[in-house]
Image (cartoon, rainbow, N blue to C red; front, side, top):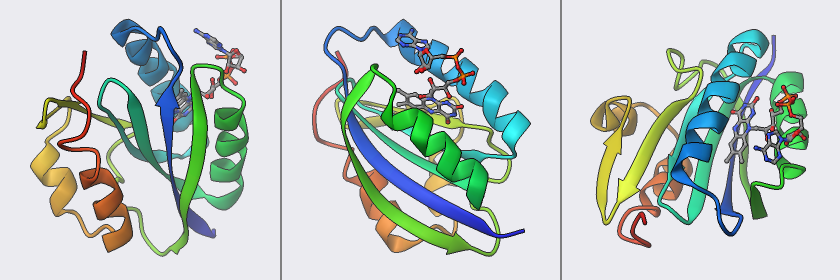
Length: 135
Ligand code: FAD
């Protein structure tokens, strides 16, 4: 089965509450387990970066849902890479919060960053650090 990795960044819509991110995560993990999608979501209180990977059709279908979601805006698609094996294979959606330059996650951040992810994806994820503080 052909697989791909897609990354994008976006801005949280005004007024989004941290609790809403928890709801997004819960829904994401249920849907992604169903669709064989795995990945990582990073949030710094203002912007999201997400890496999603899995079967090409499942990733493309998820992206179509994402671009229509009113909880974020100004979505920029970055990488769209063919993938031989998954990077985030154990995570239906890993989550990392960036809080004033500190990385904290429900999953081990060092483990995530040490994975064999393409340089472009690593740079995108790291560009989130030291930007806007979580509020
Ligand atoms: P439902 O959950 O039944 O939603 C139906 C519609 O209502 C959708 O259009 C949805 O966008 C909208 N909606 C639902 N809740 C709210 C709300 N609280 N406020 C406003 N509109 C709402 N989904 C995944 O499956 N996997 C992911 O990895 C994933 N990552 C996401 C990352 C971000 C940053 C955001 C903002 C959303 C993410 N989502 C993800 C959610 C995705 O955009 C869709 O909302 C979701 O996939 C739709 O699930 P559903 O088809 O079961 O429909």
